[in-house]
Image (cartoon, rainbow over all chains, first blue to last red; front, top):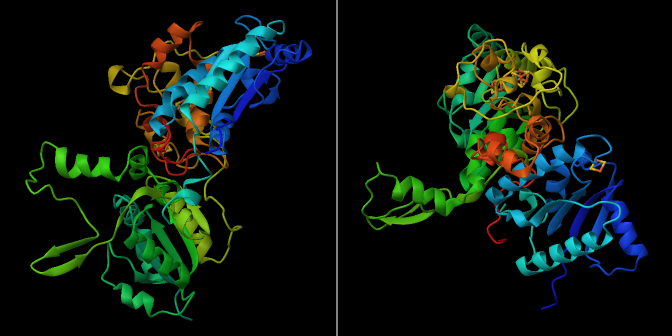
Amino acid sequence: MTEFKPKIIAFLCSWCSYAGADKAGGQKLRYPANILVVRVMCTGRVDPRFVLKAFREGADGVMVLGCHTGDCHYRNGNMKAMKRMRLLSRMLPQFGIVKERLMFNRVSGGESELFQKLATEMTENITLMGPLKIEGFVKTEGAL
Amino acid sequence: MSKPKVAVIWNASCGGCDESLVDIEDKIIDLADKVDFVLWPCAMDFKYNDVAAMKDGEIDITLVNGGIQNSGQEKIVKLLREKSKIIVAYGSCAWLGGVPSLINLKNKKDSFAVNYLDCPSVINPGKKVPMAKSMADGYELELPEIFDTLYTLDDVIDVDYYLPGCPPMPAMIINALGELLGGKLPPKGTILSPDISLCLSCSRNGTKPDRMVMGEIQRIHEIIADPDQCFLNQDVLCMGPATRDGCGYPCITGNMPCTGCMGPMKNQDQGAKMISALGGIIDGYDEEAVDRILDGIPDPAGTFYRYSTAASYLGRRREKNR
Ligand code: SF4
Ligand code: SF4
Ligand code: FES
């Protein structure tokens, strides 16, 4: 069996976590290459639908990283995101997806090491959990 | 000129959709005058063999209600697809899976256990559950095979139009039948109700404050609901923001919050949409405070996808992934 390399989609706020990830790159901090970054203007832009769609189309884990509380450039986009992701992670287990497959956290532009740590931890956790195995719609997967 | 031929069929549904056709009152008599019903198991006595003997495309309109949950239903809708010019997914079950598709959060084994074995009011010493093949008095009996997953109609056959609602409201039915029988055909794939959220037509929409905040979530029976205020503003979940318009909000008029029976707007996932809306108005500054409020939604999937689990982005519970 080939080694399982998880696919993790990370929605990063352009103002903070994306800058943090960028800095991590600039400092040549190593973090796993499984993290596929989607840059968004604010975590408030991350519709729960994006997360579900990521899972449906093959992601084994999803990260949503935003500004620290009080630092959101659009005032409270990160608060909305926190609430949405918290509610969403209560629902995912009902569909058989353990809630740890979705991470919400906060990383500022300077915290390159924190980004490295979260990305590494997430990859390790998801690797232990194994692949999610959702491929396409019920229609294409089912018995019919 | 011969009258248009119409068929009505039910699958995994409660019978409410058939009932709703009769509920269009005297218009049903007009309808019965204008068309020839060639199949309607709930109301008239026709045989599937009669349908099988028809020419392809001979039926003008077939109204299919209910999702597809067993091989018998699969067979008959496939047959009706061949014999019909137009297939309408009638009601939210055919369109989205409906309430029965909540079974997709479990599986066949769990549902058999609840319904035939563990239910306190069931006496079943032989521990019998439905089987596709069984023996009785030396005869082999065959029943349709029940699937593990409930499918939407368009998971199984090509569908021309969708009529939302649980069940569809009389005005919508009359409108839709008028259009389809009058030959005024909308583009294929049209969902026959406005593609905007229910809030936009709701009489209480104007009472929403500029900054709405839900400090807790209460069930409707726990409060004395104000008859004019938006339910969300009364800390009661209302699916209006994530639900398609077109029903005329009878529930709100009856002072009950919307549970979402008209389904989502185009290309939306009803649960994701509702989570998105709630994230914007739930109070609380830190995780603990937010969690306390969210404890008021003990069954998020069942609340947000009450009528649309089979058509949701995730579609069903996946057993294999931990
Ligand atoms: S949330 Fe409900 S009560 Fe409030 S405006 Fe929307 S449909 Fe009406
Ligand atoms: S108010 Fe909501 S639950 Fe009631 S009929 Fe309309 S969409 Fe359905
Ligand atoms: S701007 Fe960074 S989370 Fe809103």
